[in-house]
Image (cartoon, rainbow, N blue to C red; front, side, top):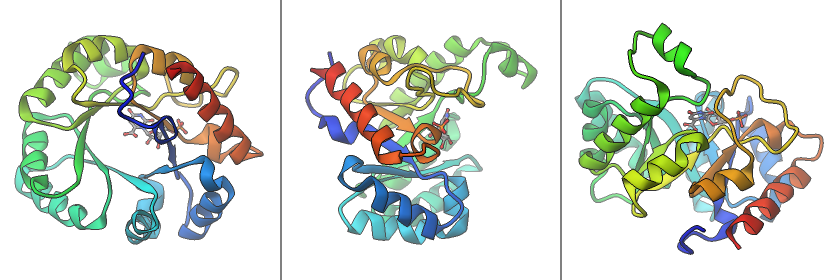
Length: 236
Ligand SMILES: O=C(O)c1cc(=O)[nH]c(=O)n1[C@@H]1O[C@H](COP(=O)(O)O)[C@@H](O)[C@H]1O
């Protein structure tokens, strides 16, 4: 069972992986009160989504800026300072020690929380080895989670497959955010490490990030409502 500190409705983060601000606004209208938390990533962010993030946060929705920063420390720090004025709740960086340290130092004093992306949910062991790593996914995820914790990062992004092991490492004070969510029967797409919403919550996830199963659904509001119901039942 999850700690009661996060409202059930706020645990679903819908990824606005859409081509324009107009398409994103239409989706937000359609979803209405069913969704309180939105993620803006590359596709929308590079198409006007950063200005929209500020507006969305101003309208009372929570915003997750998924910019997955990774650069030299000075560049990351200056980027984080710029993002800190947008009113977002979360910002992602890749879980490299220099990058995490720069981001954590630069967000100090703002309300922005830094999430470290451990190993992308589209990767399995073979993909990691092909990228030059000797570690398996679970070992690299755990190593990076320990480094993130030691550096004062606010939360971890990982697959729900690692959630239970991560919870044992990071305790209750760091946020555990899991993409790679697929309701039963949903198309997997390019995701390799997946779980259903109910299983992810049971494994210890705080927040579930869901894109295509909602935004590509014929009825996005019904899809979001079904996931919200699954989350509510899993935490009850
Ligand atoms: O940082 C992320 O949000 C992220 C990390 C990760 O390891 N895997 C992952 O899928 N994501 C994001 O989560 C969303 C998942 O989208 P769907 O696969 O369509 O549900 C996308 O916007 C991804 O960019």
